[in-house]
Length: 232
Length: 206
Image (cartoon, rainbow over all chains, first blue to last red; front, side, top):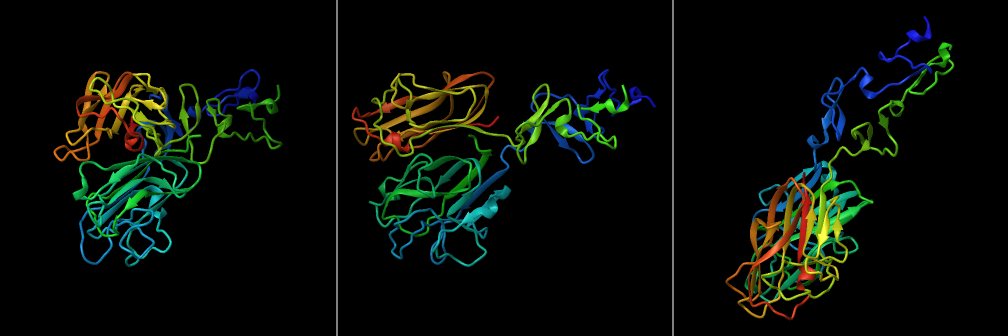
């Protein structure tokens, strides 16, 4: 057999003896209408081109939502405090998403295992999902939240924002007021974080007064959407 | 030429005559800089390393609680302004607007490339009393998009403050602003309320 009979996947050598191969020459690759931004994807038996636009855009998200006002025993969507007084002094909004009629957690990707409760927090029985502080792996994230406050009287108020574990503010500040103190309208709290390390984020207080650690569940939501890899 | 001169993808045979060909040896593949969990994406001429997962572009104009008084008295002839000493802009081809040339990190919109967008914003205005209110709406060029939004004085018990939201798809570049529609009792003495609490958030979703 002479060398010029050698072919690799039907590709013959050049006069210099090199056989040039492309992905489309491989036996398990078949392209159809290949265009820019297409990806190679395995379809179970071979590789084919698919549009990047057909891939999942948001592969990781976490929604923890309270959906019911509650009175009496139980803990629902209240503000975390490290004191035993009824007057909140510390740092994070606490969201109940225990999937038992008071809230729900809708989670995709790996964020489900990243919920962290602050040290010293006294909460209900085990196995429930109480979110206060969220572990965020490397990447870009949109942070969304809304809440209502429960205050000791009409003069109470809180100024809230998304924060990291060092209390750096990650978005706009929103004032939460009691109903008798002018609480009206939308209370969206937005944030954005672009991190190349794992960090923790929470919905915290820039300032607060007479914000009771009582239950006020309607409309409380925390949403974390991973929108892409870390951007340097 | 003998057979041992044969190469495949410029890879020479070993002593047993075997030619080992890796993905990067293929003529239409360049894996330079590839990282874990990346895939190969066709760039029009060859396959290069990239992320399979899509990326949403964002613009986020907010102040991270920095203090700066609103740069002008609210006026129905103007747009809403946002304060952003460190603006976030990850949308390729987008640029920030300052129509009234106010400077000092105040912006009243963005020029956006063609695409699909989710847009939200707020205004926290300064008013002289309980009749104070300011209604505004997002605009793509001169076209109103989304819902009417409102800022109201805290003592105004007949108005309901709300944020503006819109979804807008455009096949060409456009200027996004929030146009003031109606205004009552604007205060010429301004505060840092908007700097601390106002925001413009744009998500490029397609």
